[in-house]
Length: 114
Length: 113
Image (cartoon, rainbow over all chains, first blue to last red; front, side, top):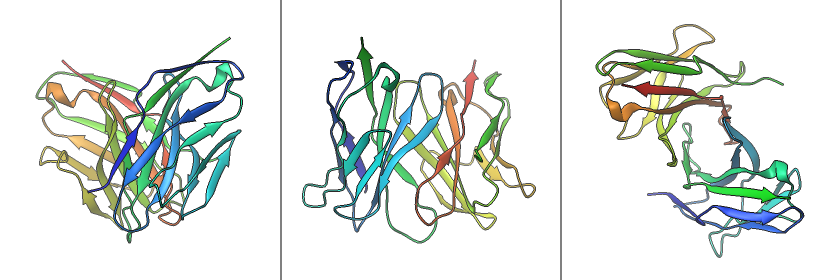
Protein backbone atom coordinates (compact mmCIF):
# COMPACT_ATOMS: atom_id res chain seq x y z
CA UNK A 1 0.00 0.00 0.00
CA UNK A 2 0.90 3.67 -0.11
CA UNK A 3 2.91 5.20 2.69
CA UNK A 4 4.71 8.40 3.63
CA UNK A 5 7.73 8.65 5.91
CA UNK A 6 8.77 11.93 7.50
CA UNK A 7 11.71 12.87 9.64
CA UNK A 8 11.08 12.77 13.37
CA UNK A 9 10.57 15.99 15.22
CA UNK A 10 10.62 18.30 16.92
CA UNK A 11 12.91 20.40 14.80
CA UNK A 12 14.09 23.49 16.65
CA UNK A 13 15.66 26.36 14.69
CA UNK A 14 16.63 29.93 15.26
CA UNK A 15 14.86 32.62 13.29
CA UNK A 16 16.33 33.09 9.79
CA UNK A 17 17.83 29.59 9.75
CA UNK A 18 17.45 27.26 6.77
CA UNK A 19 14.80 24.58 7.06
CA UNK A 20 14.66 21.11 5.55
CA UNK A 21 12.03 18.55 6.49
CA UNK A 22 12.58 15.24 4.76
CA UNK A 23 9.72 13.25 3.23
CA UNK A 24 9.88 10.04 1.24
CA UNK A 25 7.01 8.02 -0.11
CA UNK A 26 6.04 4.60 -1.36
CA UNK A 27 3.29 4.42 -3.95
CA UNK A 28 2.29 2.61 -7.08
CA UNK A 29 1.86 4.68 -10.19
CA UNK A 30 2.25 8.44 -10.17
CA UNK A 31 0.91 10.04 -6.99
CA UNK A 32 0.33 13.70 -6.33
CA UNK A 33 2.30 15.04 -3.37
CA UNK A 34 1.37 17.67 -0.80
CA UNK A 35 2.59 19.50 2.24
CA UNK A 36 -0.02 20.52 4.79
CA UNK A 37 0.60 22.72 7.83
CA UNK A 38 -1.23 22.64 11.15
CA UNK A 39 -0.80 25.68 13.39
CA UNK A 40 -1.48 25.24 17.10
CA UNK A 41 -5.17 24.68 17.75
CA UNK A 42 -6.12 24.84 14.09
CA UNK A 43 -6.96 22.48 11.24
CA UNK A 44 -4.88 21.43 8.27
CA UNK A 45 -4.00 23.98 5.63
CA UNK A 46 -2.67 23.10 2.22
CA UNK A 47 0.82 24.62 1.95
CA UNK A 48 1.94 23.43 -1.47
CA UNK A 49 1.57 20.62 -3.96
CA UNK A 50 3.21 18.90 -6.95
CA UNK A 51 1.41 16.59 -9.33
CA UNK A 52 4.17 15.13 -11.49
CA UNK A 53 7.86 14.34 -11.45
CA UNK A 54 10.22 17.34 -11.29
CA UNK A 55 7.37 19.71 -10.45
CA UNK A 56 8.26 22.26 -7.77
CA UNK A 57 5.53 23.41 -5.44
CA UNK A 58 6.02 26.70 -3.65
CA UNK A 59 4.12 28.98 -1.29
CA UNK A 60 4.99 31.52 1.43
CA UNK A 61 8.73 30.97 0.88
CA UNK A 62 8.44 27.18 1.23
CA UNK A 63 9.43 24.90 -1.65
CA UNK A 64 9.38 21.18 -2.39
CA UNK A 65 10.40 19.31 -5.54
CA UNK A 66 8.82 16.03 -6.63
CA UNK A 67 11.75 13.65 -7.11
CA UNK A 68 10.59 10.39 -8.61
CA UNK A 69 14.08 8.87 -8.77
CA UNK A 70 14.49 9.19 -5.00
CA UNK A 71 10.74 9.05 -4.18
CA UNK A 72 11.13 12.20 -2.14
CA UNK A 73 9.38 15.52 -1.58
CA UNK A 74 11.51 17.39 0.93
CA UNK A 75 10.21 20.70 2.28
CA UNK A 76 12.64 23.64 2.38
CA UNK A 77 12.61 27.27 3.39
CA UNK A 78 15.55 29.60 3.19
CA UNK A 79 14.80 31.71 6.25
CA UNK A 80 12.26 30.62 8.84
CA UNK A 81 10.27 32.94 11.10
CA UNK A 82 8.76 32.41 14.53
CA UNK A 83 5.36 32.41 12.83
CA UNK A 84 6.34 29.25 10.91
CA UNK A 85 6.19 27.25 14.14
CA UNK A 86 3.67 24.49 13.40
CA UNK A 87 3.36 20.82 12.54
CA UNK A 88 4.07 19.97 8.91
CA UNK A 89 2.53 16.93 7.25
CA UNK A 90 3.66 15.36 4.01
CA UNK A 91 0.89 13.55 2.14
CA UNK A 92 0.20 11.75 -1.09
CA UNK A 93 -2.81 11.05 -3.22
CA UNK A 94 -2.67 8.10 -5.59
CA UNK A 95 -3.81 8.88 -9.11
CA UNK A 96 -7.08 7.10 -9.45
CA UNK A 97 -10.57 7.90 -10.54
CA UNK A 98 -12.49 9.59 -7.77
CA UNK A 99 -11.93 9.32 -4.02
CA UNK A 100 -8.28 10.32 -4.00
CA UNK A 101 -7.81 9.72 -0.30
CA UNK A 102 -4.78 11.36 1.26
CA UNK A 103 -2.16 9.24 2.99
CA UNK A 104 -0.29 11.29 5.58
CA UNK A 105 3.07 11.05 7.23
CA UNK A 106 3.33 11.28 11.00
CA UNK A 107 4.00 15.02 10.94
CA UNK A 108 7.08 17.00 11.94
CA UNK A 109 6.83 19.68 14.58
CA UNK A 110 8.84 22.81 13.83
CA UNK A 111 9.74 25.26 16.60
CA UNK A 112 11.36 28.52 15.60
CA UNK A 113 12.96 30.61 18.35
CA UNK A 114 14.20 34.19 18.39
CA UNK B 1 -12.38 32.82 0.27
CA UNK B 2 -14.69 29.79 0.61
CA UNK B 3 -13.87 27.38 3.40
CA UNK B 4 -15.01 24.15 4.95
CA UNK B 5 -16.84 24.61 8.25
CA UNK B 6 -17.49 22.07 10.99
CA UNK B 7 -19.75 21.96 14.03
CA UNK B 8 -19.45 21.57 16.90
CA UNK B 9 -15.86 22.50 17.61
CA UNK B 10 -15.83 20.27 20.68
CA UNK B 11 -18.18 17.43 21.60
CA UNK B 12 -18.09 15.52 24.87
CA UNK B 13 -20.13 12.34 25.04
CA UNK B 14 -20.45 9.26 27.18
CA UNK B 15 -19.37 5.84 25.97
CA UNK B 16 -22.18 4.09 24.09
CA UNK B 17 -23.89 7.30 23.01
CA UNK B 18 -24.49 8.32 19.42
CA UNK B 19 -22.84 11.43 18.02
CA UNK B 20 -23.28 13.30 14.77
CA UNK B 21 -20.51 15.52 13.51
CA UNK B 22 -21.47 18.09 10.93
CA UNK B 23 -19.62 19.65 8.04
CA UNK B 24 -20.43 22.16 5.34
CA UNK B 25 -18.04 21.57 2.42
CA UNK B 26 -17.05 24.17 -0.15
CA UNK B 27 -20.07 24.67 -2.36
CA UNK B 28 -18.76 23.63 -5.79
CA UNK B 29 -16.83 20.62 -4.53
CA UNK B 30 -17.94 17.12 -5.44
CA UNK B 31 -15.79 14.90 -3.21
CA UNK B 32 -16.15 14.77 0.52
CA UNK B 33 -13.98 13.10 3.13
CA UNK B 34 -13.66 12.39 6.81
CA UNK B 35 -10.32 11.93 8.56
CA UNK B 36 -9.40 11.61 12.17
CA UNK B 37 -6.33 12.43 14.22
CA UNK B 38 -5.86 10.79 17.58
CA UNK B 39 -3.90 13.13 19.84
CA UNK B 40 -0.24 13.20 18.87
CA UNK B 41 -0.69 10.72 16.02
CA UNK B 42 -0.95 10.90 12.26
CA UNK B 43 -4.03 11.95 10.33
CA UNK B 44 -5.94 8.84 9.20
CA UNK B 45 -8.41 8.50 6.35
CA UNK B 46 -11.88 7.27 7.29
CA UNK B 47 -14.13 7.58 4.26
CA UNK B 48 -14.66 9.34 0.96
CA UNK B 49 -18.04 10.19 -0.54
CA UNK B 50 -18.98 11.04 -4.09
CA UNK B 51 -22.24 11.15 -6.03
CA UNK B 52 -24.23 10.33 -2.90
CA UNK B 53 -22.39 7.17 -2.06
CA UNK B 54 -19.25 5.99 -0.31
CA UNK B 55 -16.40 5.67 -2.81
CA UNK B 56 -13.80 4.32 -0.41
CA UNK B 57 -13.54 3.53 3.30
CA UNK B 58 -10.75 2.44 5.59
CA UNK B 59 -10.72 -0.48 8.00
CA UNK B 60 -11.40 2.02 10.80
CA UNK B 61 -14.77 2.86 9.23
CA UNK B 62 -16.73 -0.12 10.57
CA UNK B 63 -20.46 -0.63 11.05
CA UNK B 64 -20.51 1.90 13.89
CA UNK B 65 -19.79 4.69 11.43
CA UNK B 66 -22.01 6.13 8.73
CA UNK B 67 -21.99 9.21 6.53
CA UNK B 68 -24.77 11.13 4.93
CA UNK B 69 -25.34 14.16 2.77
CA UNK B 70 -28.88 14.96 3.87
CA UNK B 71 -29.24 18.09 1.76
CA UNK B 72 -27.25 20.06 -0.77
CA UNK B 73 -24.86 21.56 1.74
CA UNK B 74 -24.29 19.40 4.83
CA UNK B 75 -22.12 16.30 5.15
CA UNK B 76 -22.39 14.34 8.40
CA UNK B 77 -20.47 11.61 10.18
CA UNK B 78 -22.44 9.51 12.66
CA UNK B 79 -20.91 7.23 15.26
CA UNK B 80 -23.67 4.98 16.57
CA UNK B 81 -22.18 3.78 19.85
CA UNK B 82 -19.06 5.66 20.80
CA UNK B 83 -16.06 3.97 22.39
CA UNK B 84 -13.26 5.52 24.41
CA UNK B 85 -10.89 4.94 21.49
CA UNK B 86 -13.08 7.12 19.25
CA UNK B 87 -11.74 10.16 21.10
CA UNK B 88 -9.93 12.16 18.44
CA UNK B 89 -10.04 15.24 16.28
CA UNK B 90 -12.29 14.61 13.29
CA UNK B 91 -11.62 16.57 10.13
CA UNK B 92 -13.94 17.01 7.21
CA UNK B 93 -12.43 17.81 3.82
CA UNK B 94 -13.72 18.51 0.35
CA UNK B 95 -12.27 18.73 -3.13
CA UNK B 96 -13.11 18.92 -6.79
CA UNK B 97 -11.33 15.62 -7.51
CA UNK B 98 -9.14 17.21 -10.18
CA UNK B 99 -6.60 18.36 -9.12
CA UNK B 100 -6.31 16.10 -6.13
CA UNK B 101 -5.89 18.58 -3.28
CA UNK B 102 -8.39 18.64 -0.47
CA UNK B 103 -9.43 21.50 1.76
CA UNK B 104 -9.90 20.79 5.42
CA UNK B 105 -12.23 22.17 8.01
CA UNK B 106 -11.02 23.25 11.47
CA UNK B 107 -12.03 19.93 13.01
CA UNK B 108 -14.32 18.67 15.77
CA UNK B 109 -12.64 17.45 18.91
CA UNK B 110 -14.59 14.43 20.16
CA UNK B 111 -14.04 13.36 23.75
CA UNK B 112 -15.63 10.09 24.84
CA UNK B 113 -15.79 9.58 28.61
